[in-house]
Image 1 (cartoon, one colour):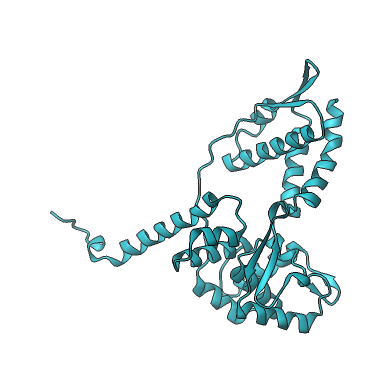
Image 2: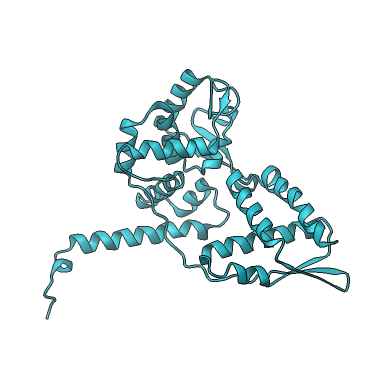
Length: 282
């Protein structure tokens, strides 16, 4: 294997992420950018027939970037090398040690604000916002939702890594789906209108536009956060929420319980009379 091969296999790897692993276009694009950015800079050596890729020159170049950005780029390289090993190539990655990334709590939008936006949303905007909020979907999952997977009471979602999960279909969600089908006549995917499939960017724009009308800046993923937070705040079992979200690990879901605790503390400090005392207690 040569350094030129390292770039050549890149396209096969991206196809694998997209077609086999079911990654979103946006995620695959970020992987591609990380690989292409680093390829001219990584050190290439060979030791006992094993190709050795050292990321240190690349890491020095991106050292001033945010820790989370660096961590994502290193992760892309680890995934790429793991893929190459599965193809039977003798290759080793060095200087890919993880860096500590501060954990930030997700920022859900409140139920009241969502209802405010839905009240003035256009039909397609209402469908997209409602489904992201009531089904807890990733944007890529909504984009890939086929009509054949929508039942009367359940929706079958194909998520990350091609994992399949069933999510309850609420009455509100069923109504907006029926209205969309009547108005737009989708044939294969739900997010079609008159023979044209809406892109992920179009769906993202619809969410942004719906909330902009009420003076808010909201992303599609914040609606997924709101879904999880509302369920946990109303005593849903964390194991059930984890399954509904399609999380590979319950540890991922537990961050929402921390968010609930933070909100409770904020509300306590606002509401309790002793917390409003400025002179203290002595």
